[in-house]
Length: 180
Image (cartoon, rainbow, N blue to C red; front, side):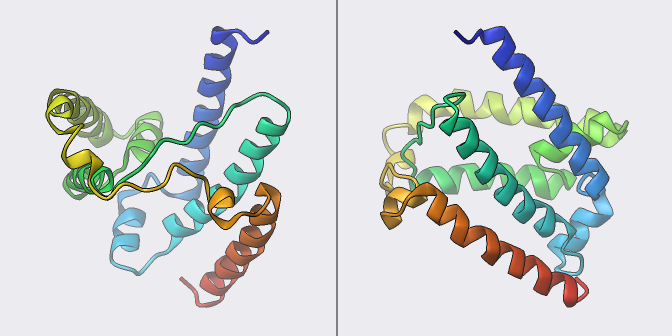
C-alpha cells in the first residue's frame, strides 16, 4: 500500500531534480528565455522537447509498474485561452514560467522570489475567485475529447512513444545543426 507522505516525498524529490536540471540547462536565465522569445536561442525548446521524451517514457513505465494512474481531464479551447492568458501575462511581465520561477528561486534569483512567487500566488488566487463564474461557461467552450494521444490515434502507448521519440530526437538534431 502506498502512503501519501511517500508520494509527496517522491514528488518533492523529482521536483527538485527538475528544477536543478532547468537551472543547469539555462532555462532559469532571463537572457536565455528572452532569446527563445526572440527566436534567437532555442535552449528552452530543446529542454522542453527532451523533457517530453523523458517524461513520456518515465510516466508510462511508472504506470506499467502500477505506481501511477493516469486520469486525463477534458480540455477545451476556453480553458487553453484562459490558462494561456494568465500564463502569458505572468511570463511577459517577469520572463519566467512557474517551473523556471521555482528553479530561479532555488538558484537565489531575487527577481523570481520577489516578483515570481507573489505572481504565482496572486494568479492562483485570482483564478480561484473567477473560476466559479466561468467554469460552466467560458471554460467549457470548444471541448476536446477526454482522451490521450494514443487513444486518439488508436495505437498502443509505447507505439506512440516509439514514433514520437525518434521524431523529437531528429528535430533536436536539426535545431542543433542549425546552431540554434
